[in-house]
Image (cartoon, rainbow over all chains, first blue to last red; front, side, top):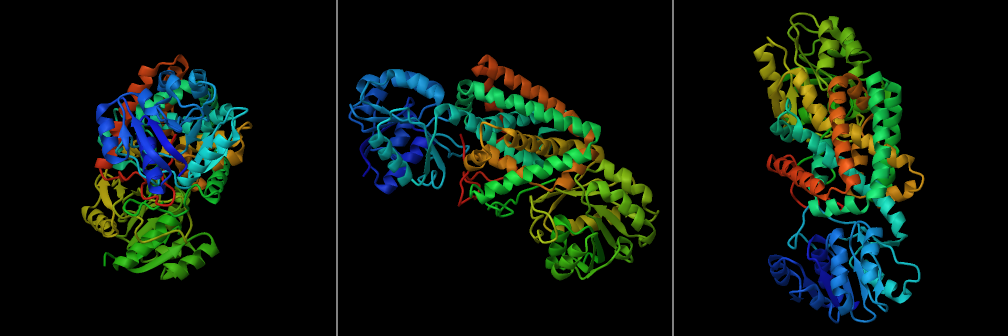
Amino acid sequence: MTYPRVALIGLGLIASSMAHAMRAGGLAGEIVGYARSAETRAVARALFCDRVTETAAEAVEGADLVVLAVPVGAMGAIAAEIGPHLKPGATVTDVGSVKQAVVDAVAPHLPAGVHFIPGHPMAGTEYSGPRSGFATLFQNRWWLLTPPEGCDAGALARLRGLIEAMGAKVDTMDAGHHDLVVAVVSHVPHAIAYTMVGVADHMRRVSQSEVIKYSAAGFRDFTRIAASDPTMWRDVFLTNKEAVLDILGRFAEELFVLQRAIRMGDGEHLHAYFTRTRAIRRGIIEAGQDTAAPDFGRAVTPAQDG
Amino acid sequence: MTYPRVALIGLGLIASSMAHAMRAGGLAGEIVGYARSAETRAVARALFCDRVTETAAEAVEGADLVVLAVPVGAMGAIAAEIGPHLKPGATVTDVGSVKQAVVDAVAPHLPAGVHFIPGHPMAGTEYSGPRSGFATLFQNRWWLLTPPEGCDAGALARLRGLIEAMGAKVDTMDAGHHDLVVAVVSHVPHAIAYTMVGVADHMRRVSQSEVIKYSAAGFRDFTRIAASDPTMWRDVFLTNKEAVLDILGRFAEELFVLQRAIRMGDGEHLHAYFTRTRAIRRGIIEAGQDTAAPDFGRAVTPAQDG
């Protein structure tokens, strides 16, 4: 057992998956949960929490590990509420997709003697809520930790042990660098997917039913991305604004170069560009982040193209 | 048996999958193949063609169905070469992702008495070449046909019969409308995916290895799209220029609105926008174009998020 008592604040996809994984591995003595919605608390009590409480303050009483699993924009208020009730020596972590904004919002509210180790499990589905979790969500996925300077080595090792026991791989880095990396590999791709789905939604000459009926690989993958939780993504874009706007600016420039090549009929440019992008894909397959199988395991609906 | 003799011109993913499907279903008496590369011809002869020829003209001699499965930019030259050798009453179809440009390039070279019925199988993987085909590629996928006005009803019914026997669903529409629909659901999403992968490739502060290592759902799906055949996609963008530039322009406008909302910190706008895009995704799942399973069958590597 890694922690005698774990408090989960917020009981959505990530927290419920953590609870299932901790129970499956016998990693926590007691799992206490809190969520704002009474309905969510009832589901959590029935499915994966030993105990749920009416307030966040109650939930963290005596907890050895507190996990903040609420949208990034709600972290500061929760931290202010639980700060005075934390057990001395407890570890507080979070699972937000942005790290510097969470550090800025949460750290001021935590008393000395509590170890704050921000984290980001890079795992999820487009489903949300307490019924969406499952024990294997983190299997073989990255879980980034951004421990502050001077972080207690013992507390860090213990948290890392829990995360690895849930099946994830841990890397540590600086909070600011984390935010730039995820802007490139996740936040801006999501912004773009939302935009493309929005364009299709506005078309008059192509009906909605045609878009849906003939949606091929490109667009279908975009809609999957664009179906993720709206509150979570609103907060991501509001709190990782600087890095997202930097990368979006670069994207717009790059898109205009491609658009110009299409307009000018510059086939050589297009072919060279499309050839280069293949190499990154190969790197991802070699790094084990995806499968090379032609249908990606979609036995029922093979990937479409063209 | 639907056609006594079928000639496949070009022997890549689509043609080889057609050959496997036709053999599996006993749909063709003889399958003759031609490709420019001697190596490709040798593979095709070994894997799925009854006979291969040294020229396209030879391949179409006596064929009841001729399938043009070369890049869109190569269709015109091939049509000029085979035109004089086509059997009277034969049907010619193609599998290009763009239709009006193919009609313009091919139709002038075909003699009277030959039935030209352009087509577009909306199926594929990011793999190409004669070894990449498999018999079930078209299973439950759309195969769009754009028969010209006055098209012979018998020839159309026969071709439709073959396609449906290979497992696909057939719809017919006007070539120009086809090109707009696929610009929205496929061509522009591909252009965007290529662009995002290109941006990541240029970043200095985020290393290539970090991009690859931490690539999450958004970016990983983009690289899959961006790994498709460069020649095919160059030709798509050069030959469906008008519709692609129209949709790209709308996309850029929409992106700037989103970018401005992020810059201004307009959380209400972002939340409303992200909520709207969920509906399209639900429509696609209900239309049976994708699965609702959280991991999309990726048992080994569940979809990532955040």
